Amino acid sequence: MTDRKNIIKEIFFFLSLTFLLAFFLTCLFFPYNSVIANRYMKFGFYQSIMFEFFKMFFPFIQISTPLVFSGYFTHRALSSLSRIKSGKTLKRILITLNIAVIAGGISLSVLIAANRNIPAGSSLLLLIAGGFIFVLLISYSFKFTKKNIRKAIYLTALTLFFLVTILFAFFNNNRNSKNPNVLFIVVDTLRSDHTSIEDPVRRTTGYLKDTLLPDSIYFSKNYSNSPWTLPSISSMITSRYPSQLGIRNLVSKIDEEDFTITELMRDEGYRTGAVISHILLKKSYGISQGFDYFNDRNISGEFGNHIAISSPGVTRDAINFIKARKGKKFFLFLHYFDPHYIYLDHEKKTEYKGKFRSKDISYLRDQIRKNEYSGRDTDYLKHCYDTEIRFTDFYIGKVIEELKRSGIYENTIIIFTSDHGEEFVERGWLGHSTTLYKEQTGVPLMIKPVEKAHLSLKTFEDIPVSNIDIVPTLISMAGLKRMPGLSGKDLFSTDPGNHTFFGEVSQKEFGSDIELVSATWQNWKMIKDLKNNRYELYNIIEDIEEKNDLIGSFPDISSKLKLKIQKWLKNMRRPGVKGKKRRSLSDSEREKLKTLGYLN
Image (cartoon, rainbow, N blue to C red):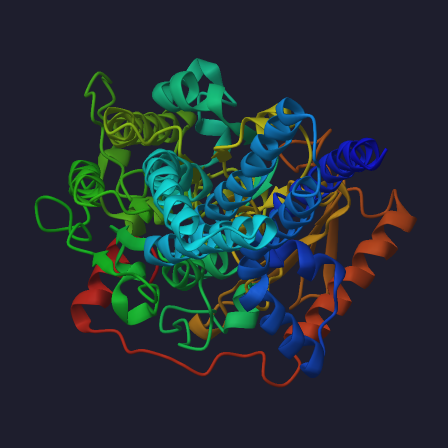
């Protein structure tokens, strides 16, 4: 009768154990992510201390839980089995199951250790500790002699040796899947409506459309937060608006106190690298914060000036960085400059012989101001611009092919975007940095995830998003810790359609009266001219080119967006928001910037 009760007790115990293990597996493999926690928690000082303490010890809680529970329940089971006098076959089966339980607990602990990036040495100590727990439990439960204890230790050591060999082989692969590489590609001056993705007739980004797009999510209504490079990329890598960073002119720079995605990646154990090709991204502008490797030798192009070609050099240095990674996870930021003025005709198939072949942007803008140009002149500029994009697309393709050749493409998050667009006299200007309309701020955004579940989203068709949302989205996708002071939103876990974002440009410090702010929400975009206190309103879904001002037609929408702009401006103007750090421009830098159209 006692044996029957013990057998029933053990069967009931195993059913309970199965339920408990299922429960804890669910808890243990739910990825701890401080970004998720931050979404639901508002931190004060003491709460932040508690949160950081919890964050520090959470991996070890995850690791020890399987050991503690499997060890405890195995001890209970073996103690009960030691009292069973009959049913040797059933007894052996139950003992075997209990051994499997403790072995599974050890295995699960090491698996979690690997997934949480606990060093291999710590994982080995964990295995050894688990082995001794196993031996002591058996010894205590069955009251083994010293001779039997020695045998149990030998058996356990042999079992653990095979367990270590199998599990660590698995962990090396699994570690990669949990820590994706990140390739962040920015093509300067690339407006979205000149890509093959949005305008297939142009055939400019054939590689990206045919090869990367099928594995990616495309955001068809993405906007930069400023129409020129320095504030746009500063905002892009910090997820803070240019006004928050104090980036308003050519002598502004990112403060050391402004935390960038690169610094977060480095803190998370990534090898961080950048290959850039724009004078406004030099080290002296603060963009290099957090990079282990910062390559700016392509700024002058292959032939010593910005008229030259830089894409081959950027790609060459990027491939060398990838090859030298030595198996370590990496964050690589690539900046391609070629579509920026001065436009080169890479294909030389046009018969155009007009005056817009000039490389002097001041002359071209003067001709436009005098209205001494034709559609054929601007068509030639667009043709050259498109060949620059096509040329750059080819060299980006070489980098992605290197990821595939190295076997790391699947485990690499790829972000592709631009810092701003380019105007071809749609509003009477050639270039950028002057307005917040689509031609200057509408840029592509494509993200290739490593988790295939994200691909079910496939496209954010007609949902407005902006580059300020890239960093929070990347943090969530890569499972990184939270980053302070983010103004953007994680596009995959919030409702981006109800998210308001802002754009800004100011030329006040250069003697111009241009000072504009925009707010985009749902289908609507409002632009405010701060100098003249004038508002414009556009339906960006129905009026793609933003030509039909509806400010007097939708009073409720107008009032809502006006309040959003007023609140945002108030936050940007509060004490402590404006940046303090500045740099000076050398004579050679001024000359280069003038050539590029920034100082005229």
